[in-house]
Length: 373
Ligand SMILES: NC(=O)c1ccc[n+]([C@@H]2O[C@H](COP(=O)([O-])OP(=O)(O)OC[C@H]3O[C@@H](n4cnc5c(N)ncnc54)[C@H](O)[C@@H]3O)[C@@H](O)[C@H]2O)c1
Image (cartoon, rainbow, N blue to C red; front, top):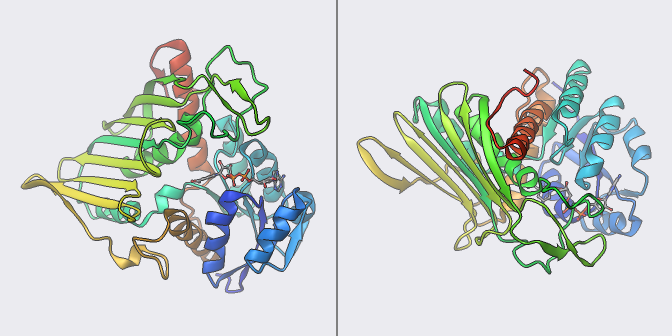
């Protein structure tokens, strides 16, 4: 067990670093942010100033190579994650990385194995796994509240890109537009597929799904112009789990509703749990449960132990949930040993499911998992 304060290097000084990552590290006295790095040097300097971080840098390779850092935190655009995460692990750092690490699950799995061989911990930005309500639900499952799971339903949907004039980030506008490409499934499917995996406690044996492009033309941030973007902005799939449970997942960023728009429902032989992570009336989330003798779903108060220090139901979900994620990562690093939940292996499994659903749509059939079998 190491007791010294963990020193963190943050790559990426954009919106999500500001709203979630930096407040999370700053909230925990067992960590200190040593440097913020962004090729847009002014952005790194501004954010370092806001969060009283002593250094700002522009070259990520210099930061990753430093010997005075324990953790590299990657909050950069998706297409950079793989290169940065690999370099950080090779340099002997624990890594927190936004999802996806890579578009091909095999690459994420290879990195997970490399980190394990080197005794390093990894964590994916699976924000919603760490909401107080989802953590509380997981503890109810551990106590046997649901019993044998029958059906999982997961949603991650909101309307942040319903208006085509709102610039879409992170899409490759140079890609071939003749075939529909995954977008919402990857960006918004990942966290809820992960929660289903974690709650049901089993892998999928097969999946079948479909994707749609509802808004054909939209403004792309990289160009500032309206373009044809043939990307999935809504999708649904169903799957069968190894333990006999079945499930469905639905994601979209053009379906009306508030952030973050996550809902997870698990129905089992002894009980049912519905976690609704949709900011409503200023409250970030609600959890409701029912049992066979009390079938009316009732709201449960989430015990304070599932909140980060100073956290409460009316805090912004962005900082609230991420503070729990970062606290958990610090716990895992300091404890040593093997405990490492929501890691790159979980990320690889989720990405494999996404790759399978995409193939299912293209080939109009069920796809068996694991993909290599
Ligand atoms: N887990 C979640 O719930 C969640 C929510 C929002 C965003 N995200 C993810 O967070 C990441 C960042 O999103 P954002 O909205 O902050 O984007 P953003 O565009 O606002 O910020 C990204 C920043 O990274 C910088 N950057 C690019 N390459 C870099 C490099 N090699 N080294 C250092 N900095 C580099 C860019 O200059 C930019 O300032 C994305 O992967 C996004 O999908 C996750």
